[in-house]
Image (cartoon, rainbow, N blue to C red; front, side):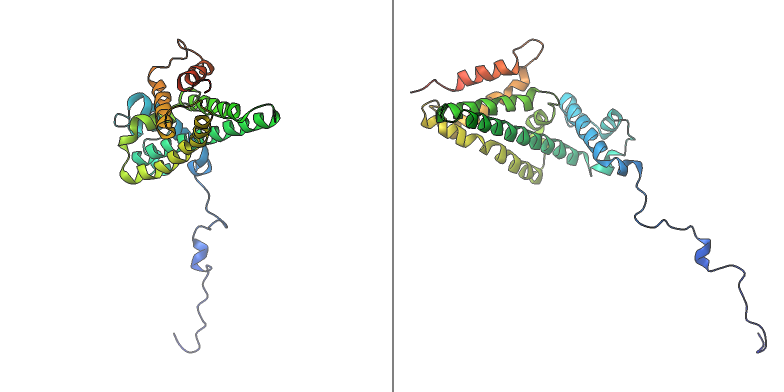
Length: 236
């Protein structure tokens, strides 16, 4: 180029003008991302049902995806592995059980306050235990009842770290029974040691998932009445 030549003037703008323009703000979410919470819950529900019906080992992620109308690889968007999905199912079951248990105890406390002065402490503890047992039957045998039974059946399928994580929720759940049983022991309604009583009561209630049939058996209220009569005596 000579010294007197005119500088080159590009006909086109900067190179960036040729590139696709990027939308401002956050990138647009995929359909799965937009519906993440709902799809995750659908996967948990389907996995819980299939794990209970077929067993963890016999259930594939393809089975679970098909049950909710997803592609076979889509569950891995929500969960790292089938093992992680199993743990999530158990955690969901325990959190639901804890929420139901807390609601039952709050109801018992409200009932006792409403009858202030007319309900002795022993009767209040009996009401609490009745509500704990009824709530436990709801968790095991009521609508959407696959989550905790999966935990009972498939606990050995978890690794050590997963068992430790789940154990914290189990301790929180079982600890609510201890003060109620202690009060009943003090009033003479419970004769056996509190710790053993808690383990035996929960063990007996949990076994109901093996034999209970709502079409042939008693109602959950009748089961609760039978459990109260079995585990307690009237008074000293």
